[in-house]
Image 1 (tube, rainbow, N blue to C red):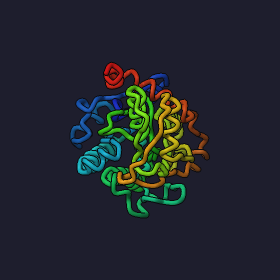
Image 2 (image 1 turned 60 degrees about the vertical axis):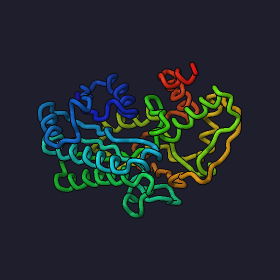
Image 3 (image 1 turned 120 degrees about the horizontal axis):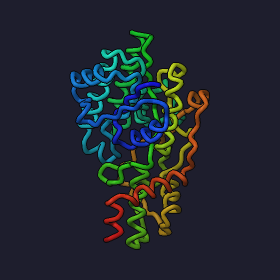
Length: 314
């Protein structure tokens, strides 16, 4: 039985992960940010030295969609950079041998025409709309690699997931990513009788979105195989859809039967961001949840929130 520390346990990935880990044979630690302050190196090291986890899954971070990243680039860079380096340095000082660090597909160069391979990280300019967040994630991944090179006994590996959505997502349009934003927008449109819903851009930008519960499943799967993992490994579907297709899939689930209009003056980020998942498949894992099933689960969760109930009441 391993003692597993999960950082970011109150976030979407963390909450999905804790649901699975609680059914496992592991002892799970999931301190709040007030209990474990990753912004302070000394406090982080002291906590790790006291509790002595065998494994750390680092999913904590400042996250948000394109609007939030554009609005607050300093916070997305500084907070994620501090959390990553404090956690990793503290883990090494506390003699924690295994860390699964969660990266992000925004670590890759912008507008690559091909599926993104792990060796492509830092080979080109980053997408400007989320550059701060991406830089912080790149540094944490590189630090894992440097630490392994200095001490080969350390199993500090980075999993790079594709875009995520699902249960426990954020649906506030100020901070939400694409799929939860679509769900909320179409829910409001159906409730209010809107016949037209606006899409940023022309709808042709392509994205790879995986259900967050599937990432949790992958983490638990690879937790038993950390020695087999490469230093960096993509986790995703290996296929993508256009933004318009995500709107159409969500409209089918939610029951919106209106039309879509396009605002080509708005930013859309990278035109395509698809991961090469060859390494993941070679190790025997693939995502089990279909897009329709995932959107249905995410929508059902959204309907339990006060925000959705307030909209319905209005």
